[in-house]
Image (cartoon, rainbow, N blue to C red; front, side):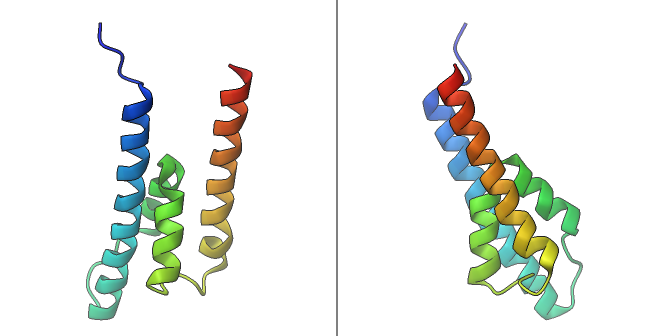
Length: 94
């Protein structure tokens, strides 16, 4: 059976989810400017929690979107830092 959780696949996933997080922040900012249907804040946090914290945080500051909301300014980096700590911890503990 072919191994699914290879280093290559994990790196590809991290790159994809962060690009997607960056894109989704751009899209939500664009929709906000046009007064259109918005992406739920819960969805933005889910994308961050699924490993897209670097992308969503970068998008937040690049597009100046959600930077006035403390939940995002603290939440996105906090989730990202927790994920990095978990990855480092589990990499060492193996």
